[in-house]
Length: 474
Image (cartoon, rainbow, N blue to C red; front, side, top):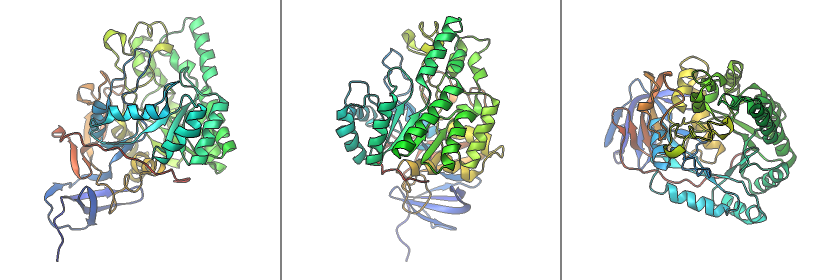
C-alpha cells in the first residue's frame, strides 16, 4: 500500500553530490527530501529535470549585507535585495556578518542585525559575528553565551583602523574560541605594512584606485597569514583564512595543512576572474574603483595557483565575499565620492558577487575541465555546510535533509550584464563575462523561490538557522 503523495517530485535529472553522480527521481514532503529512487509515483507538483543537474542548494558562507559603514558610505544590499540576488544565483543559504562596533555590546549587535533580517530574507540565513572590541565583558560573558546559542563562528580582522585587533587581542579571542568550540575566520593582511605602503604611495602622488593593489601587497597578506596560523597553532584552535588571493598566502596554508594543523582556507571569484590590471580602469582612471576589494586581485600566476589549490584541497570553501557598494551613490555615498577621488585609501573596499559566484566557478572550472562537478558541489555547498555546523540538514541531497535544490543547466550560455542582476549595486565587476552553465531554478525547502522563466517568485520565506559547532576535520 503506497503512502501519501509527495508534495513535489523532480524527475529525470542527474543528482550531483560531493562524492557521486547518478540519475534518479527525487521526492519532497513537508520541506524535506523523503525519497530518491529510479522511479517515484506522482506528486502534487512535478518538475521535469531532463537534461538538468540537481545540486544541493548553494551555500555562500561569506557575504556582507546591511552592514553599517560609519563613514557615510552606504552598502548597496539590505537583506531583501541581497537574498533575492542570492537565490537568483542558485543559493539557498547565506551567512552574513553581525558587526560589533567598538564600544557596542556584542549581544546588542546581534539583536540589531536580527531586526534588519526579520521577514526580509528570500533564502535561509545564519550569522557569523565580527569581533572588534574584545572587552572582558565580551570575552568572559557575551561571546561564550552566544556561541552556546548557535552563533558558532566569528571573524576577526588584522587590518582596517576601526576593526583591527593587535596580536594580544587575537590570542585572547582565539583562546575563547578554543574553550567554547567556536570557529574563527581571519581577514589576514598586515595592517602596519599596508599603512606604510599607503603613505609612501601617497607621498609620491600615486593615488589612483590601481595603487590600492600596490598598498595591499601580497607580502602583507603572506605575513599576516603566517602570523594568524602561528597564533592558532600556539592556542590550538581551528581557523579559516578567508578570501585568499594567490600563491604567497597559499604556501603558508599548505605548510600548515602538511603539519596537520586545523587550518581551513577560502577563496573567491575575484581571484579567478579578475587581476590587478582591472584596477587600472580604462586608463588609470577612477573606473578602476569598481574592482577595489581587499585583498585585491593579483596576477595571472596567482590565478593559476588558486586553480591548483581548488583542485588539490588547499581550499575548502569558495565564497563570494559579496560586499556591495554603489559606484555612483547619491550624495557621495558610493565608491565615487569626493574623498575617494583624492586617494585610493578612501575607496570603499568590496564588490558584489553573490549572484555570480556559482556561475563563474562552474563556467571557468567545470565547463573548462579545471575541476570536477563533485568538487564544485563540495566547495560551494557541502563543505560550507559541514564547516559551519549545518550538515546534513544543508549541503546534501539525502533523505531527511532540507529540500534545498538548485536545478542547473550545464549548457545554458549567458553574458553577465548589470541589467540582469538582482543585487542592489549599480554595476557588476564581471560585466561582459561569457558564462556556460547557469541555475534555472532554485528550490528552498521544497518551494521554488527562483525560476529563470519567472524571476524571484513566492513571498520571502527564508528562516534563521542556529548552528552546531564546527568539526575539527572536513
